[in-house]
Image (cartoon, rainbow, N blue to C red; front, side, top):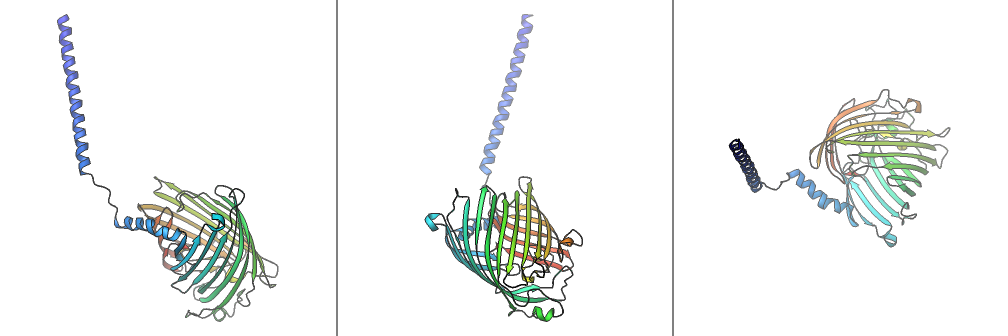
Length: 401
């Protein structure tokens, strides 16, 4: 019996030793394989597009955001085309707790603007700030197709819009991401026939239709109040929301064009798959209420059409006292710094508030590319289809000044 147990123990110990040896051998083989793989590994090589975007973020973005002399790229307004400018900025005003920013810009379409802005030191533990500003611009080729949803492309005119503005603004931030504010602004508009357009002026094309505000532009005092909720992450958002509501009152110095206006703009981003897929939704409504016997001048009416609203239509294709815009977009990362997108736009302008609804919306859809960093958009390319205006290609460098 003892001999049997002895033999069994010898066999068992031999098996265990063999198994341990096999495990050790497998561990050695795995370690050798890892060491061999490490010898063949090479650092990740960014492709050309990633290298260019990285250089822009490292060198170009600081050139735009720094204090002192800086450059500006983007557009001045819808339809201005590519614009560039330069400015001077310092955040060390008033014991390093204020801002002075002066800049000027010019576009390839001969649009130009200059602006000066001063912000005082914050008070109330950094929650309250005040600023004053002055701006002068000239937009020489603004499109006009008529007023209301029935406007067509067969009647197309352009006009020169010159505007001088000066005002003050107060902002109060009760908590992170929430800003409540208001301001007062003096506006002095001036309309003239476009000097650079081959198209006839508005008065010639629309000689049988009244165009409010075409003759005799009054100066305005504009007072406004707003609430801004912003919890985007990052600044070139992939998550979060940005909601804004503003009430404005335009008081003209004549008895013709005094009115009130409400603008609500709601934007939401939702991401998934490690933020490489993003759903974006936007709803915007603008509605105006003219005083009895007054009208809203056409150049202060909400508009739709162009690269930032109904992308399947021309710039300022629709214009009216009331407007509704709905947008949806699905973005997906192609590689770092480049997103592709599918989008859908819908909207309308209306002559009365009761017709601001979801009936008879103008629509378009399309595809696009977004060259970006976490700080913002570098280049956006959109191809829009499906509208009664035909196909449109938009290339937008940077943002709006």
